[in-house]
Image 1 (tube, rainbow, N blue to C red):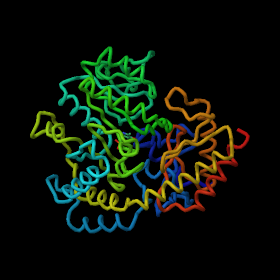
Image 2: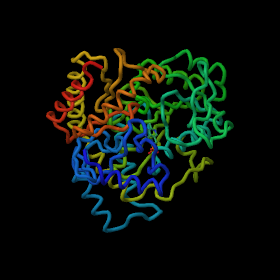
Image 3: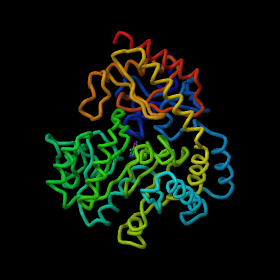
Image 4: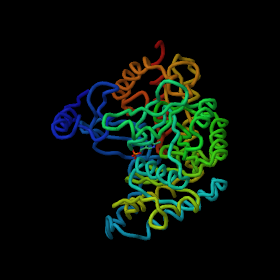
Length: 428
Ligand code: PMP
């Protein structure tokens, strides 16, 4: 494969950008080789700087649920461009998008009573703001999170579990003081006993339980509904809040996200990715009594220069409007085709899937917690990734990352990819 242009760009990048990238996984360290520089995207397809085409299963890490450059999204962006890119003050577009989402959530997840939403420019900011709000609302300090869930790169959430069931977090990055993570408790997923123990030890001071209800940043660790229900119960019983981080699952697994899919209601929910239709957007939302604690009505400070900017708001609204029942049915249909054909081959690798999110894992049983993922399997994934690139399929450059389907994909696309995957994993 001739990747001259990509390699040249990467060597230029390495001189002026740390490791040549603006987000670490992009550097291809987990799969080897050098990053592929992308030039354009159309529907389900990408084109790189050297002219190769790929079917895109990364979809910018989730936002592009209707593929690249959907005409309806481009059209509202173009029309917004003739008026302004940003005002740094209030505009109609943010009101319209907020109304649209609140109405959608009122219909899809009525029990959660999501009444207000505030926009940010990234998922990291959304979750960081949500935990500050939970602390400000409850007057408590600790956050309980789960090993294997990612919530962005804010200091107190960059933690790894210590040894033991429910442990105080240990910084997982240089530059994060231990005192910053001392208020974060880490439990394994899928383990009610560990959560109970955390509440026995710290219950009075736990402001919130924070979870990706569809953990999709460390493999796809699908949880039992009963586990999510247990979290709901524990939060109510101890006066803590339940925060669902739906930055990936929001608007993807259902219009009302995992909360709708599992029928479990969070107190605060965070969104990102799909919500911006390809532009940088995040958001957090909840009941009036919680959200009204935010500045300037309440004492919890939170802000953003580009928050609610009209281009991103217009793109987000156009994106959400495209997601009708037909879109979800289609995505689920494509997902079923992929999963059933791959798993029917009865190989030593299987596929876990929820709707349009999929993940290849080694073994017979889909892991539900981070420590059940085979580390050795990552070497095989690296080979698979290379094989896919050579055969015109673009997957995320790490075996811990999931794949995303998009609506412009066809049954033929899926059949070709399934055949390639079966061919590769056969005999491994
Ligand atoms: N939460 C979850 C569940 C995520 O998947 C991500 C990003 N992958 C984030 C938060 C952080 O979002 P961002 O990268 O937009 O800051």
